[in-house]
Image 1 (tube, rainbow, N blue to C red):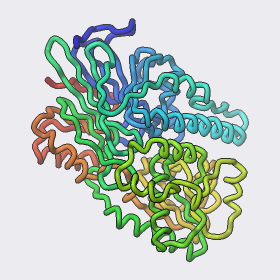
Image 2: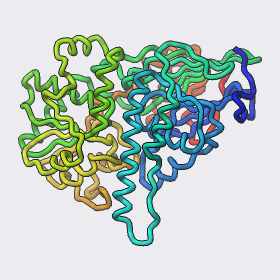
Image 3: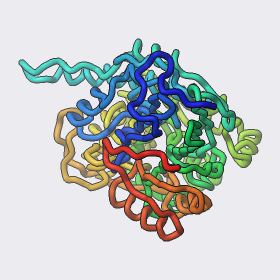
Image 4: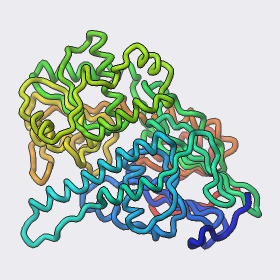
Length: 481
């Protein structure tokens, strides 16, 4: 391979030295987006939605800190919306290059982005109907046509198959074990000063969780960009998490309330359904009605069923014994709007799993509006909640929260169950990264708030990593030799 300073007629980088600029998920968790300049090309590692306070989110998501038409390609780690959710906006604003990802990620991204466009359009319509006279009309970030144009740009590449991103630049996807199709990204750049390498962990999975294979070893590299979401935090054991989930279900049912679980439709929903299925099979839970109220979750579950090559061996055995593991024998998947509305008229105990996972959009907002003033009900938070999201305010047990433009008293029980997280915890990250201590020259920690980043950085230095830092948004670093 040989690096060139201009590729495909697009604008070349200003320096021949490979660099990375951290635009999103820098000292925060959402909006993953890192710009790589190497071999005369400009690439993005992920292009995710920033999630937080509504006005701030709109401003940050709409405007890119670079010209989208100057980006040559995108390497997508996985299909969670905070990693892929701003791709249609990138295309809308002029990006015309390929978007590389694994086959399962391509299938899931179609589901995720189609649903995101629908939510953007529906939420804009809802808020416009309720806006004060004289206020400007709210426009959706993107629409279904933008998503269609984006999906045409997706290029699927299997795990462990090296592929050329451009002259002198080669990439490879490695199983990250975080989500169906999730990948670490390993980049090699060659030029007059020799080869340099970069590894981006994306979201690194947690060993021992059901359904997916454990993460593969992290590829050695000169520059390592690692997530640090749960730096300083230890997850409880999977078995303990299942026990706690069962306890919450029983406690809520005995009160006669509803259990609301805001959950990402891709990954987290399927894990919760798996656990509920197992608990009911073992006779540890009554056969309560379970509703997955998310059209996207229905389609995502179909993608899961079509990509069993990503499953671990215990799940494959279980599927052979119980083909209805994700089916409708115990779970009712709700797609139509009137069926979703009808759930709020139910008076008997039930379990409602609905997106979005951070309670920022989607049908879960309507279920929360109708139920969080009921002290018999429970809101089970099953994953990380970014600052300024409604989910974070629920975790903080604010006495009053604003939902769909109305202040609502929080009287329901709120339970945080981070043991369902598919992110590696502090010890898991250390175990995965430790083998690289002798070869990696620089580590940059992303996808984590400052305190977790500092905790992980201290531990990494303690096991032999020298240059470890958590970059600010807009900060750049050269790939070391």
